[in-house]
Image 1 (cartoon, rainbow, N blue to C red):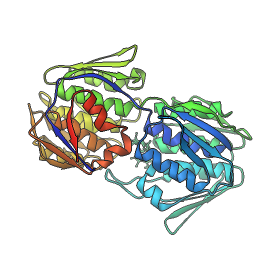
Image 2 (image 1 turned 60 degrees about the vertical axis):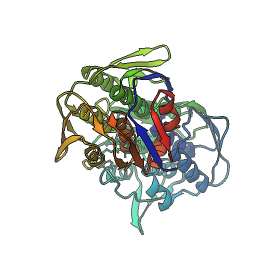
Image 3 (image 1 turned 90 degrees about the horizontal axis):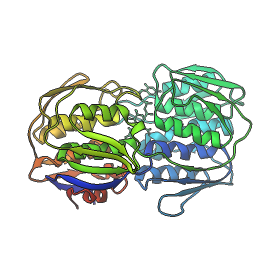
Image 4 (image 1 turned 90 degrees about the vertical axis):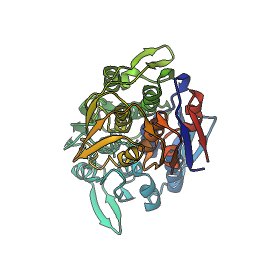
Amino acid sequence: MDQLILRPSGPLSGEVPISGAKNSVLKLLAATALADGTYAIHNVPRIADVEWMSELLISMGADVAWSGEQSLTVTWDRDCIPEAPYEVVERMRASIVVLGPLLTRFGRAKVALPGGDDFGPRPIDMHLRALEKMGASFETVHGYVEARCERLRGSRITLEFPSVGATENVLMAAVLAEGTTVIENAAREPEIADLASFLNRMGAKVLGAGSPTIEIQGVDALSPVDHRVIPDRIEAATYLAAVGAAGGEVVLVGARADHMEMLIHKLGQMGMRISPDSAGLWAMASGRLKAVDVATLPYPGLATDYKPFLVTLLALGEGTGIVTENLFTGRFRYIDELIRMGADIRIEGHHAVVRGKEMLSGAPVKAHDIRAGAALAVAALRAEGETVISDSSHIDRGYERFFEKMRGIGVKVDRK
Ligand code: EPU
């Protein structure tokens, strides 16, 4: 089944449960390599990326199994093979975050170099420079980075850009390093704070995660823990966008407003009403939303991952909005698909000028990545006729039960 077929829907209503954050759980799974024993990770989404990360851990020597609907048990009790093969890294670039934990724990790691993807090159120079400063040496052979070190040394690391992956790799490396590491210009995403709280419960000494300066005092050993993953703010944003496009009133059960302040503010400017309630987040929209300008920035700015949804809402809004992408220069490809659905969007460098229309027009389109695919599904809610999204398996990489959840709030969707 690799096609979603959608028809105009709305107003939407009901409740949609928000799953655990993909971009948190993938890093927590990598962090389990830091100590032997058994971990229980709860609120884990059943998505392809989690299966792939589990496969990677298994190939390195761990036992990984589902225990109950949303919990994963990870056990390390055999020798670890500190290697991430190309087949895995190529499918899922997030696997590069095993580098830090493997290197600091075992003194060596071999990780395939990630290639580019649909939204541009994905270099890891900042990860490598920081780990080098901590005492690691790297060699690139046959498409692999081979890393070695004696015990890593705590250092002062200033990141050129608050990269999520580089912050996570350095953080995980620093927890077992000798002495104190300070990461300046660290990424501040809620997923980083979640990783730090996981590490602290394992016995690490991390201060300041969630702020631009993180201080890590290295310890000699860590031990496994139980942990509940934070809710997925990007998944929540997707359902907010569905309400924004189709209208209606929906409760996002488990979503956290404090992780999504800038987005909630923007959607409020556009005319949506969103507020925290006891179950999570309540959202309401009626009529066309108003155009605003949008620029993506590292957290707490507007996430680049929200952009496909904001572009879609602007394509259906009243007026013209300018969208500026500051993180991934190539992350505009889905716009060609929106244009095929009748959207009026012009791309100028890393800006998109979006002129809103009352309705789009259903068309066959293709999901190029997780968020692009989900955004096309949102666009289809206000597109006359039928929209057929092919390669919809991209959506399943990052969304748990997307089809069922969309149906649950009244979206007319089938799959083939
Ligand atoms: N960059 C470098 N050198 C580096 C590292 C990053 O030049 O060594 C550049 C990147 O090319 C990019 C920018 O810095 O232009 C930001 O990259 P970052 O390292 O922050 O992103 P990431 O860790 O690769 C994570 C998420 C992405 C999300 C970005 C930005 C995961 C698994 N992925 O990627 O999420 O878009 O942060 O917030 O956490 C998704 O969920 O679909 C997704 C792509």
